[in-house]
Image (cartoon, rainbow, N blue to C red):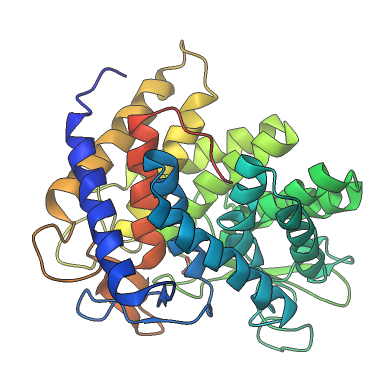
Length: 376
Ligand code: GLY
């Protein structure tokens, strides 16, 4: 792809300047999942999102080598270590997010032996959620939680990377087998005939019988939640990388092609693919995740496959559109990318900055600018 990438440097400076301003005011604290009037409140390492802030430190440190980021990373590594030890909000699949953007980069880039142990301990915590009878990792709640028992979600595709990493570290194949069983069930049941996705799917936790697809954050049970579809594209692509199962690559490509058919004129998706025009809310975070997924997929397509340049070009135009029309550049607020949606059905973070959206926007810029080895 021969594109002008010089504008990207200015966007990287915008992000790094704002990160530093936030560090100056909030030190090693973490932003909450979504902003309020585009300003994040900062606090402790809780909820499912704090590692996206750590991930932004890692990207900044990799790009600049500046000590300020390393200092925050060190505090965050200890914070995630404590979170694991003290068992703070560990009853969910998001454990993968926590460690994929904290101790996994530390282990991969700096070969830290403490991080190696912590990654395995975190994976041990995640596999507790595995329901043998169904071959799935329950997303939310404990096994007695009647609303969430036997329920998987498409977002979990991203979190299986922690299990593959633990397998690579320990040689214990059971981590891999559980991740692989889960992703095959996700492929079979979360992906619909037309290659859109359910957000969530229920299995009978006693018998393992597949029951029904539903949504938690989308417009309806039969619509396609944009961020879920973006998690599908990126997540199936990553699972292909760890397993070499070509069918997972095919699924990721089919999910991507479905998504691209529903992108509006400016390439920034609405919060649910049910909407393709008009004044409905966008979800810029879904656009950024999709851009990262498309760039990852493009790497695995032969040069002769026309989807390769199509995906690169679409990712470029999503990120360009976000950069030109959706960032907080020039505004006195502490968030980065506007017009994201956390959850409309739960009335959370609507038309705000969302921390994962800021992270993936940054990751997408980095992916467009240089050859970058993912943390995932
Ligand atoms: N993984 C939670 C979300 O995308 O809202």
